Amino acid sequence: MTRTERPSRDSAMNASALIPFARIATLATLLVLTGCGVLPQSRSTTTYDLGPLAAAPSQPPARLPKLRVAETDGPTWMDGRGIYYRLQYTQAQRLQSYATQRWVDAPTRLFDDRLRDAVSGRGELTWYGDTSVPAIKVDLLGFEQVFDTATSSRGVVRARATVFHKNLIGQKTFVAEQQATSADGAGGVKALAASSDAVIAAILDWAAALPLEAATATGPAALPRANPPSRDSVPIPPVDTPKATAPRQ
Image (tube, rainbow, N blue to C red; front, side, top):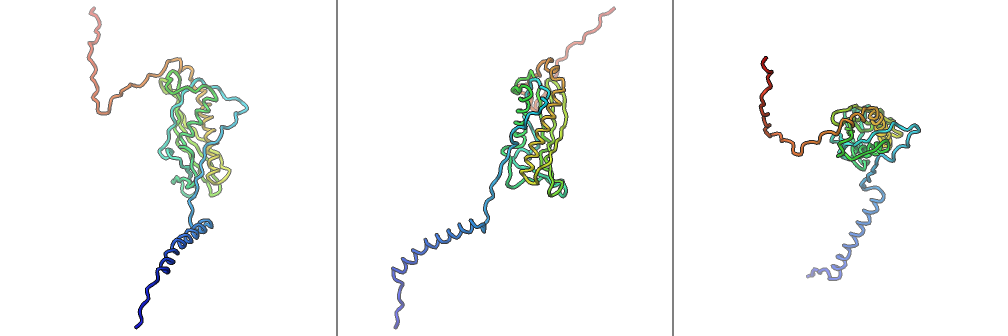
């Protein structure tokens, strides 16, 4: 009768010793595949700002009086850092963002910094709490790269500027567009930077022609109430006062 032989202790140890080597071989294979591009790799993100300020024009622009600048606002999609584009030739109603290209900050913040630098360069920028001087506020309405064809695009910036002091002094909408040098995100960023500078220059040229000095002479705007009434508050009825009557003849 033949007796079945059990595996020896040495053979069991040899099998267990092969397991780490198998894991190392598998890891090495994965590294090779990753290096060769067989496995999907995470795509890096490129970030942009608006670049340095444009060179000063040979003809100095009109000087501005002391101004304060309110925070620039825009639609909610400008709160993020996406660089948006529109395929005007095929999907004009759809606004899309680049997958691997971003602004370093929200477009409204980038535009706001640019605006303040421009005001400082043409006059004196004061803090917003100084209500003795007029204020300028900009609302960004559009900030996108528009593709007219698959190989041709432009950077379009639309903004509404409001200048006020005690009352409204002026309000106007401005549009600027610059042809992109390349049909990609990098080209769109350059075009949007140039369009932003053009819009800001037009806004400040317009503001310089407004009667800002006269508005300053009328006195500061009234400060808002510290505790404005809530929506559910009950208004206090006015106190009745006797009306003056003409004396009898």
